[in-house]
Length: 410
Image 1 (cartoon, rainbow, N blue to C red):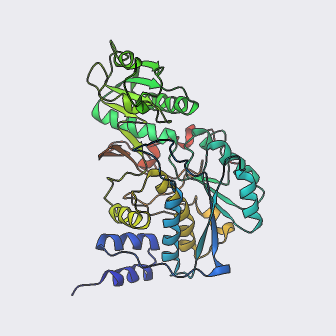
Image 2: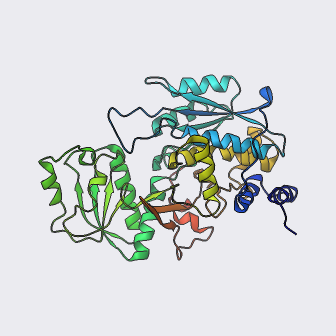
Image 3: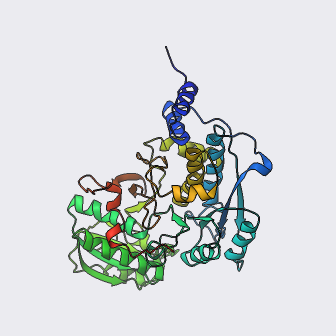
């Protein structure tokens, strides 16, 4: 007798399987999730999404970021929350705040908090995340950082009310370092861009190289300008082509978080060498080629809702909003006083299309998660790699572990 996917989902709920895991069960059967229930007006649990819209490019850009980057993932997550929330009679609403140029994120957060909002998802730079967290620290709000990878937010500048769904830079560079170790590519040529973000990525990569026994045999600053965005040949191109001459390395690592020049390096090195880092082979949370563990269902659902492919920031915002919904489903309450301490307990887990349930590290509130290693058209590997073990979970081989943390939650 054939058992319908709907019956399987109902049995999963009756068996106290978290609703999001039941949703992934539905994904395995190929059935689309049911439409969310109508919103319940004043009984909604409001989750704020504070972000800065992506500016439109001044000219044609084939890789231009979509204007709804990040917030589109949050919208899908609210629908998912309402789907799973139907079993516990919980409903959710997303309060979107698109900050204009010069608009203060702190003022926007305080205004929402005054209206009773307790949950805030942010896709903002580190300084603004800290400012919002400090402004809300005297309340019982939860701030979910979905956009700032800065290691200092998990270290000296950590906050007790902040939880991170975006991997730290250390987690990203550790993922690359593990893959290089697995492939026995041990010699690195590090190329560092001029921005502070580029230098922060380079610092993380240096720490990862030391952690996994890799050697940086050469390091050079990039001084040739934004060649990846150049529209035609320039005199500096010839100089850039000899930039790598006379060096001994297995892989070139580019630190270009601005995306100005990193894509220029592959296939232009003097010796044939692979390129990784912020361009080339990258470590990230999400990619269109991720299809296992029910991810294909999430990819299709996102594309139906938005008309485009899901990007990493969309996934990180989705994970932030789903963190609230999944915790509320598991505890059968949306009371922030109950959910905030619950997030760092072993009992909380977030099913998130990664093959394992995700949890928050209690010492710095970073979401443990596999990091995928991808090239533009294919997934290459998933970190943590096989063979990298840890006394708690292999996921803790990525990023700063408890004995090394400088975080003192306050």
